[in-house]
Length: 249
Length: 317
Image (cartoon, rainbow over all chains, first blue to last red):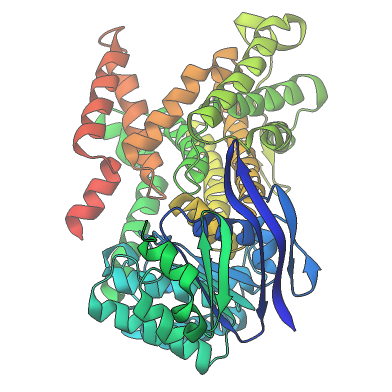
């Protein structure tokens, strides 16, 4: 069954058509990578999926239900979590506090003016387990704003994971990272996909990462879906090569 | 971590001991009990504003409106409805809080300078109502003709009208109650969502927090606390003044919070202490006392951007 079903979505900003008539289905447990040259509309497409703004036309379904006009927080409540190209964290809180906020919201405690010991202990365990998964368990008391870029990204992923999502959207998870950090994040995403069976859609520029991780690759160019297929099919696709390398005149 | 916890407990104990013994140590230093009472009430108002400003990251420049409404609510209750101090306090708190809740619905979608401007605008509406509706509010002369009433505790009566010390301890009790509730909320899951919104609104939204609804709740709670402080202020002076609703009064509260340290829970109390004590001392020396307070404010903002308490905490850390 498809977790995410996007039908003919278009987004216009005045005269500019940022996303044009794009359709995409993502099956449960699949890792789908979205690639494309700069300005292809990848992040706009992500913003449409996560509800940052509504599409001009087209529909988006999540877990079989239409969410096209649903607010961001409602989509999150239904199981959609997202990270950003520029890491979005709570820099002045420590690693544990960052993830605890996410865990408490996901646990339905966000409006509670108190929390009892048993509930707090449950949240505590959940946060510790999540931090272990992203290998941050030794840095729980560190301020997130003071961590390395790679660790900040791992903390952001931990926050997304503690929402217990059915769908994880990762916007350029290795952007601005060195080789070592890129390797660590790639391994982390691989574990989440292969071992924990998360459904993941990611935008990525680093082709080594994309071809290493993806079950399926979608190529956007100038707002349109240029091609979809397995990594092998995409590597052999002439239209994709032309979009990336340009065509000889 | 344990040392940090112990240090916090010691500071907390020191604050409460200083507050409990204020009538005894203030007199030898040239102060007087009524000054300590004013510090408590204005400190509570600054802390109420800071509940929103420092912990949700939203700047209201019209919070004096809810402070003033609290004062009028208490004054009008004592004058026209019932000679009961507790009832007056509850009425003041409800008037400030409910008006805040209703206006908050219209305000919470705005951010930054627009939020501040809209809060000023609504605040000024209440100011002009209080100013113009002379038959009810006393207009420019303020609301007079009421006084706080002794508290009947069954076995004995607490004479808060003529005994400055009794009134101080009564206000301290109310202060402790309000501050206790504030602290309790800030340590709760809801309080943590407020801090999340302050730290990163976009991330909060993508964690599933309906940001506007949470800001509205924080705004409303802050207005309830503000109304309570305003009601106490009416009891301090046996008087409610339209200037208590004016945006310049809101500016004073912002100044107290920023000067003391808006990222710390107790900072605004320190800011209010400095403000009120300086006002009391300097205004007996010069009519231009505000210039000196303003100068101090500028110095604090330039050299201690985290406020006085923030600076002390950082130098110890």
